[in-house]
Length: 331
Image (cartoon, rainbow, N blue to C red; front, top):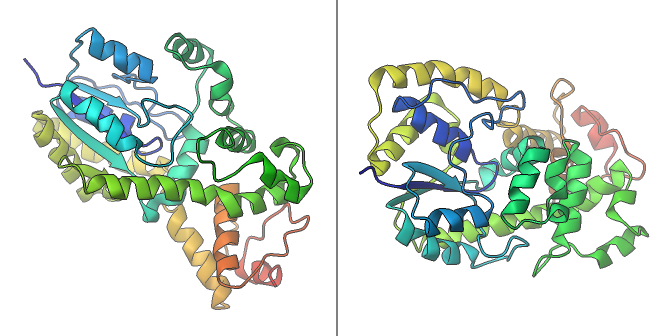
């Protein structure tokens, strides 16, 4: 009997793509999984989400060769620490092998933008998640493709966490009753102050967790280049006791450049670092042909603030597209 294998991954970290790639190289699928957003969500696979679906899978003693799930199985509102240990204590007795895909400081913007652009559920999927215990009102962020609306819902949900980094009291500084009342420039400033504290919690939680387990954990940095991507796929195949077919591996190598071209946020961390450096060093940089998200803009604002350059952001609803204009907009 085939072993039962689990991809335990942070949202936005390509767990669906890797599950598809494993099925592809072992000959179980030939259909490409890509949506226009660059996600692989056309591939259904075995997603054990919401947690109620995972618990059903375990209770019914189902056995899929490859499945995937997200962390925080026992509190979907979210804790700030300790939840990964709680999750893995539950998961390990029920799966023969586990791997994880995670972000780190080098892929912060890549992953955050992935979540904003790619994570979406339609009405049918919403009904499915409700059957497994998730309330419709707790999934508002996933019911819209508009990035600002999605971010607003994420921030609203953050106020209900056990230890929130952003609270309703924080709105008082902007004299607002609701996060949905913010102008673009105000939301950018708020994000620069609070948003990245959330990803810091996730990154730090995984750092602590890695030292306590002995199964393979891959950062998505391993997906940036073809050679490291193929190496990662083969390492997971070995860990999962999956045989990768030579002809399918060659096909996967040919598919990879198309997949990479669709990952429009893959190099955002490097780009935004370059923008910050160009302002601080008074060097020319033009990013007018590369669309920044409000998350990218907020990260740049945060980094400049930490270096003593505060953006004069009042009514700055259109972010500068070159280093001279951005430097002129700082004090």
